[in-house]
Image 1 (cartoon, rainbow, N blue to C red):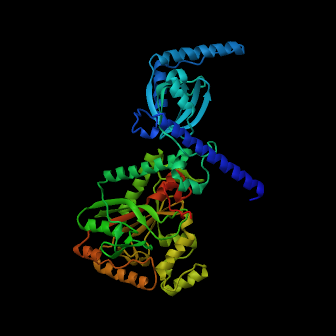
Image 2: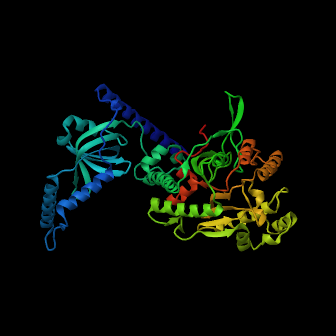
Image 3: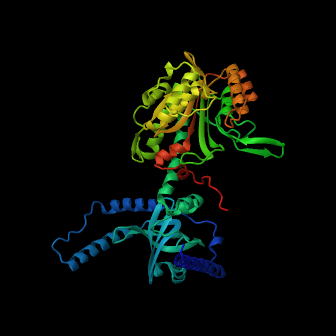
Length: 537
């Protein structure tokens, strides 16, 4: 920064400090006059801004019908203006004879003072509306106070609706009540809040200044509600399971660790919902699901955040094919409810949830996109040799199934843009999944890929406690060798399986990624209200 830039920055900071000081002085004056806005505890809000506009449009149509605009052809400018003004006045007289009274509340985002009358713009949850504020309508003292207001102040407005000569539905204020004084300065209106780091750290300002951000989180909420409604129709029961656990299992991930002082025990934040939900299947709750936060001590990128929203569901007496059918129907239903369509854009790709989702095995996907047939590979050594030939990096302990998965990740994932179920994974990467009876090196598992992303992971659940114990042993060996993402033997879960678990289909969904798709958001942080960020020192 050169000297001139440093001086400009210093001047700007001084100006901002002065403006902040003035705001506090205004608050002090209000408090001194017995008008402290922070003493107000409630306000009678009868409508939101879009309700006002819709209500007026409907009322106007009812009273005016299909009344056409006046004809001004052939008239000079003055005569045309007189005809238009007369028509406007006639319309106003008809509408004002049966006024629509409203009471709204929201943040003032714009103000223009013009002597005895002013305009402002009030923004609430559903939009914004213009307000006409006249001294003679609200009273001189209230008008003086209004003129001293600042952008960002929160107001309650009572009045009646009308349409301006420019055609904008507005509120003619009868009273203006200051409900909260803004002591900070909002970003410049026309540029909004564009700095991404500030948007994430100060989401409250982002929601005020960026309508698209607010819309994203409204759609996310609608998505969650749509999922719950869909699962209600399928007779699923929503449950809650522990977040603090002794054994963080059910996924390949490094957990966060903590210490519980009261019991003097080390605990972990859950990385999955799986093992507790399966216990409920054992207990006879045939269809269960949970939507909740899980925590994985891993890196940050556009699709990963260390705490994220996972939904897992388990259904007794079905398999992974049943999970495919349920998932396809749910995704289609949710898109229709949230977006009003099953076709939508993500970036420059049109995604189509209306068509049947493609189904392909992992082996066939690798054969299709990498040109390697793992059915023709009979040993770990052959798999490693072909990996070297194709420049696929692997580790010494990897087996054939691990290398098949590495090939899939390298050559296939980014090709799967439209919804595609990738089926039948190798047993080496699926410690909790039932083997395929006719092909025991592979399991009844699928992952759904959309836009090259893994959207969910599903199994025909392993319910053989003897097989499960052996797979836990293999995971323990990996953990002993230094794999921080390996599972550990869970004796209580094994005990539950020994009591007996019905044949079960289970699935886990990354709901943040689905929200990204449905809101056309480029990064997971855009769909998390408060994403994980490095602390500012």
